[in-house]
Image 1 (tube, helix red, strand yellow):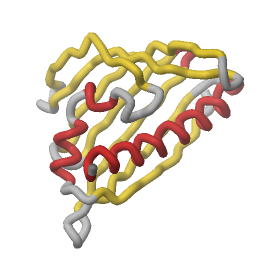
Image 2: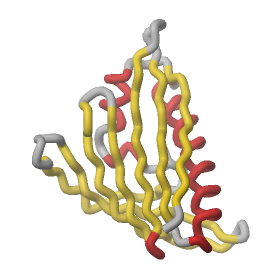
Image 3: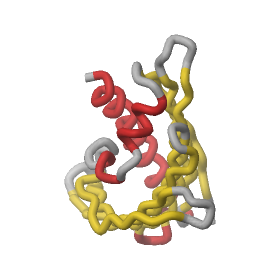
Image 4: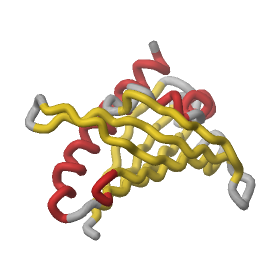
Length: 152
């Protein structure tokens, strides 16, 4: 299946631990990622190496042709992969669309953090272009909203 990767980053005037603490529960992503309008059925567990994991479902609000609204149902596995530094999310969407998100928080010399959002997106050939365009816009907005929430 075709795939594409991209990365976006932003500087946030908070420590990596503060940002990590804020994002370490799925409910923080409601409207942080602007398409996510609801998160539900959150289950907490631990994987074989003891990392905290959440499985949950989300509703993503998509618009086609600028006005046709579609509620996209997502299944997500979130792993707190490296406490205070890395969160991994793996998303399954309809029509065989898959997204992996790696959020990394690096301390800068001035005490702020660089937040790096790395995305790998897999989708059927006919959907990949739309999925990538939508994801790039959504994840750029996610970083801007994160900065606003953390610094506001």
